[in-house]
Image (tube, rainbow, N blue to C red; front, side, top):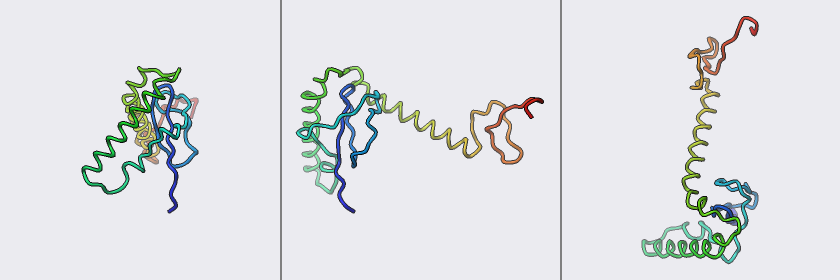
Length: 144
């Protein structure tokens, strides 16, 4: 399999950093919706270069320290200097990501329930007598 270059992008508003193995990506931040920018090459860190492979404990610790120092330098020299930077969003970005992920999982579960015919949003508590679907609605004599 050919090696894919890993690209890193950051949000100048909330400071979120993401990695992609291709150039085509979602160009909006998943935390705040702002347009993501490509990380300047002098600050570029790639997960593949730092965390892929077998290393002894000392090498893992060394790589982790180098990674954290690079993140700190990038934050201090680039992200925090942005005119758009919002420290509140930066401090809450992990919480916001977690909320977005939970919402995504709930939507996915609801979609599966609708497809399976077991949607829990059925206010009538009835099932279709033909397919057992629960995504049904009450009909009147005129709407039959």
